[in-house]
Image (cartoon, rainbow, N blue to C red; front, top):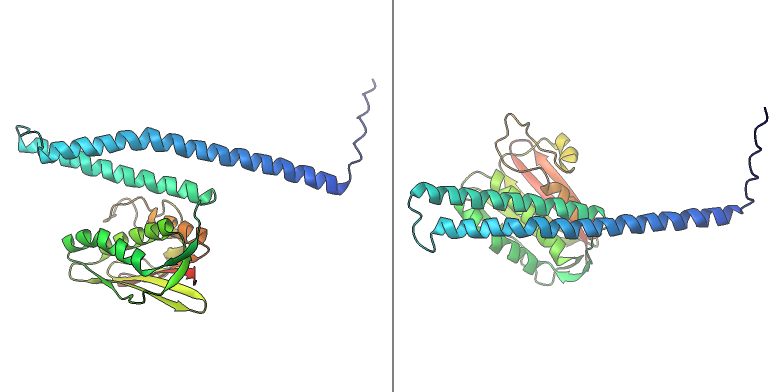
Length: 260
């Protein structure tokens, strides 16, 4: 029995083959990027819209804006629904941030002053800090300090870092925020005393969904996305993110950006 002979392989020049492979890879990358954007648009609408409705209407019920609900328990339950909705929306936004940043970021670093962004972040979280007995102390006074950054990206970084610092600081402690220019970079730090992981765990905790405590003995809520979002934002702005930690005592979160 005879088998048909294979067709002769085309005699393509090596450079032409490389160009063809590169063109096909670019097409696939474009398709992946289009699919990612479509996914983000879809889930953003389909999940954010009902979640915002749940949060808004449960808040109305919790405050009894249109009259008493008839039982104090109903007010309590409405508050639980509202708070749970907010936590779920925050988790969802963080997951979307990671998908967006891993797909290219969409950030556009520009020459921006650092101090106003720090002041905005502190003002937003001061009520939470006050409720926990924690003081936010801004050590930055240089109004001329500029860096290459995306305001949205840096706001996200500071929001995560300050929330973590407040949550892990005992009542009566101070969270210090500082920024300075050195060697062509702007070094921004958030320092707090209190519960902190071992330095050996820091690299692992930079990955999404990694947490410092196991499920059986966790004392703090959260999905383990904060540092991952900060790291990806910092890298998308052309910078870097690092942490210096002394287990159980203190932690310094460090964002390095290009000075402008």
